[in-house]
Image (cartoon, rainbow, N blue to C red):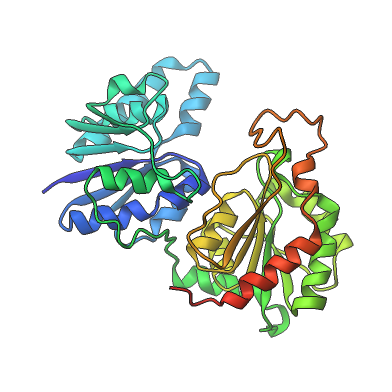
Length: 349
């Protein structure tokens, strides 16, 4: 029996976009042992997927701490123990779909005789037995993973993103979204991400929340991580009464369950926003310094993007903090697009 290891260590959005590979590999290899290697912060997204036999965690933080403390002997012992755990599973194939040195090193440590790298670089190409160039339509969400599946001869007729949830995730989401047993429909907003140039204008979120209630009849629920709490409090203070601030209060899967139950999602380029597409929640996505895709594969998920001569700047903005590309997205445009995606309905095929 084959034993296959998928390696995508981070980040949340990429884990969601790469998730169709699980079903494609399972369909092609129904009896194989299928495992995914990931960093601790992403493991939860994969843990409930019944098509995975195992989720393995790379102890990145532990290795980083030992390196900082210059405890190199302890680091070596930890690395050797980790290698033993990987090799005990006798992987026949390691698929490095991240293509970086750190992920390539994990493939090499696994001992798999066949190591396939997607766009391997940073030296990781020398650790692979096969290398597949990145390809596909760059305007389509997750296109590089669809391209990889096709290159491997996997079935791609149902290549859709999926985040598996548990009944407990959904119960926790209901408790958060229904204060006072309020079952009226709600919209999720995802204002936060890792870089300021990817943010929409903070003070406009409160105005948008008011308009979601007044014009669309939707309560607003805000999601984000623990590091976003201060900004979330400022938005809540300016926003309408009843705005639910769930920032820092949920696990990733609980956030997913809240997105699944929402009538609408509005968010910036962040992993939570991509989950809206995975859950078939009508979505309005606000992109500026990045443009990971324009084609969401769904007519009820639309990207708003105002291209400027400097776009997309990615990690090197030249606007001196003006972030004009994001400022040019107005609340009027978002509300008009929200009407559009809501008219498509939740049951698009």
